[in-house]
Image: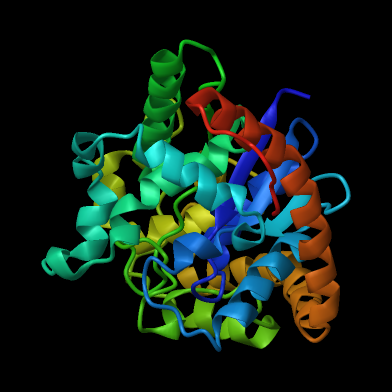
Length: 347
């Protein structure tokens, strides 16, 4: 094994195609090379208000997506973050290592808090330190990250390095990023300049992982395009990548081409050369068939699992026990390094 992976998704809304292509599918593949720990990060979720009646279902839905996509809960670990106390306990210790100036540079807080920053929760501000605790509680060596999480991983590395320096021992490894493959950023089906998002008010802007064949077909049929045929090879540079000016001119066209390429495990340049000059109506049918064949079985298995929540809860419970067995000795090591006295510990 190349090392230990840690990653997670917030249980805030229904998972969509962008979550699958940008994260979950790559995690399934990583199981062959890494020891994998995959978390439903519910502590992160409550940095923004969550309905307590909806949160349990959302947690189970993310876990169901992991399982249905092919993450092996026997080989790796699937659990809910709040079920392992080491995350919150280590986060407090790391809060005393991290520096205000570091957190002030985090751009995601500024984006999420918006203009009403004074009314944002302390948890939202401190989110990156909890993320560092998530990773360091398992001494994870690698973290799959998208563009929006790179800054947080750098902070986790800074915190680990400062802890090691402050206490004069190499307790934490510095986690390395693992960048996703093609279509790590899937864009909005109604606006190709925006990332596909769970928070967009239009349900037609995204394909949910639980959508059936009819819903997938309808959303792709309604996906925004332009009046021109599909682009040809002159939009590619010498390395086979889409030229920036071409993508800027036709964002929706290249979004659909990128989705097709990702679903078929091909480079977008190869797809463009093959589909050059086709009308969107014909291409959308091909894309629909591909999306349905890929996502259909996953969505069906998710629906089956969600109808049997005890099955999901069993996976989460077993995963939490295994995660606790890894994190607890590391937390104890951290606390002893800091100078705490141990008399008794419960989970």
